Image (tube, rainbow, N blue to C red):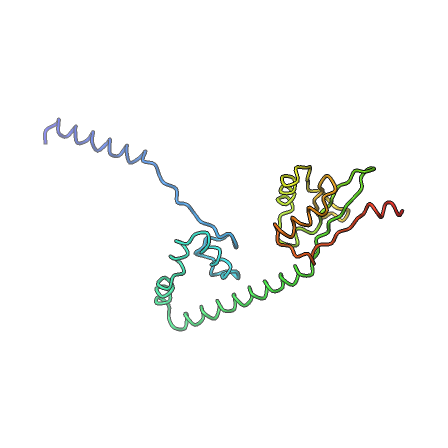
Length: 205
């Protein structure tokens, strides 16, 4: 090889190396479960596996198919011994049973919980509506307060009760409107909502 050819080959190799060095690296997108916050590949090791599977099927069908299709499960089970398969099935059944019991306890707790809508007189003829207990129904107090502000075009903020818990204070007498919003938008049963008129208490005193 002549000196010119050798020089050209060296230059070409240098350019290729430089191009490889500056080639953009595509970041791998990591999916996290909306139920347990783990990558979906690890959901099976938690106690919420059934809810995790349902979430994944709804939000990422292709990954759900990859992890939980009959072919994927058969392939996975095929690499395990019979004893390991039986143990895995038994563990999964236990986890699902624990999750079902937890959901039943949560449902019973919600059924016994109450959201309080309080009509409070601040000054003569000026009222605020205070809503307490929203968090007992897996709702974000901040999010609901923001929603109320948009829905009713009024001031709506998160405040602290005398007991130190968070509640929503809405400017104006909106007890009935908030009642309707809680039942229609947020699905809270009417039996779980209680209205209190604290202005009457003031008048009585």
